[in-house]
Image 1: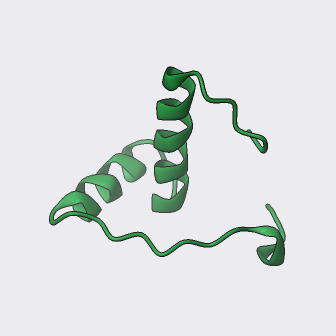
Image 2 (image 1 turned 180 degrees about the vertical axis):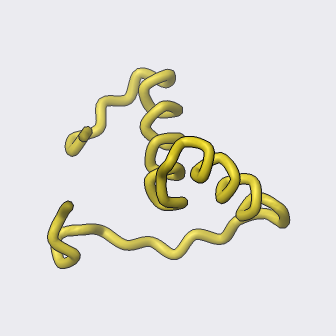
Length: 56
């Protein structure tokens, strides 16, 4: 786990209903909601051919 001081934080506003969907998907994958959102972003960026500096 990363040190909290090293993590960039960003307040994210979700469209209505998305929070519940993300929560259900996270539960199915045994992840936190944050981990589920990060996984989705990583997948989308990979599909676009974007290389992230701090890939896990």
